[in-house]
Image (cartoon, rainbow, N blue to C red; front, side, top):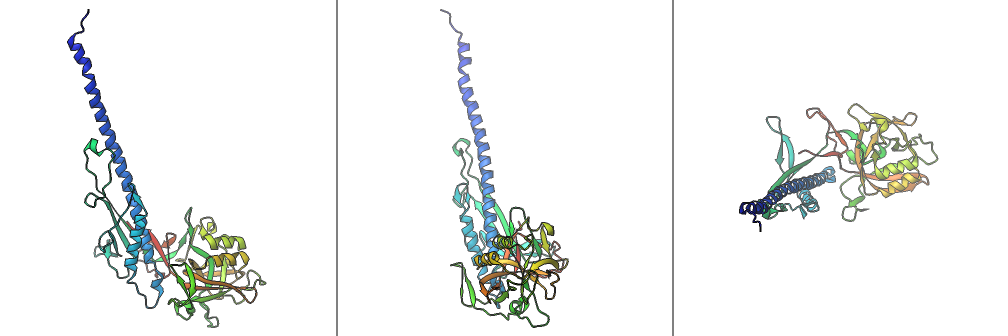
Length: 394
């Protein structure tokens, strides 16, 4: 019998531990890659959750309370902090809800962005007229919520800390609104008479709202999302359309206009805009934006409210929307001059005198990504008390 040399047996036998070592090395490498991808995914989830919390919290700072006289801004900070904590918990990071510390000065910080002596924007934590929110989100070992690893036993790696900061702010140096693809401007195609220089028409925005000449018989109940009887410190304004028998261009003593913002003043299209806002396509003839820093806009209008529009307005009762102002004596062949935007909440819609629509509105505050800011921080731009730009600032 032929004998196999011992050395050959040893060489062949050495393949087994070599393959095992190679597999371990490959496995460890794959574990590191998978863990790195998992950590990166957790960081993205963490940032997404923090940004969502910061934006929702900052939007809470754009409150109707700012329009009351006197305004009580003290509750804004704790309410905004609660919103951030709630929204964060609705988002998952690595399969677990994001938990934020609710103590002031910890994970959710409320304040304002100010300029320091060097001209830099810095975050000042304060509850005095807050307009910014910073969310510090962390998954860490010390907090008993680190990011779990796939193959921790194989690699021996410790569970990592993952931290992000998201900051969101509201800013009311508004010069207009802009359409965004896939979104809508939360605006009504409706303009309110700004002021009557003759003093005959008192149902104007300036007299009833800004000079607080309006009554106060309705209030919005946030818990039930209903308009109910009762005062809330916000003056109201009654808008009345032209008679249905009037021509579309007729003013007929009306203090409201429906604006042609891509609708052709068609009743069904106006109703759709009331329901869903102004889209990218609606503003094709306006270069996708309505801005007032270069003067008033001249826009085709109608003083009538027809059936579909009336129904859509009634369905929008309680909602806060951007609307427009028009100036007295500006109607020429159906066109009106529109100098600025405001925001209002519809409180009541009814038919009066058989064929005229009466809409009761009160001033409101809106925050939206579609607001246009003046890019020059040093420019003298009057603050808009009704419309705020909502944006991530870090």
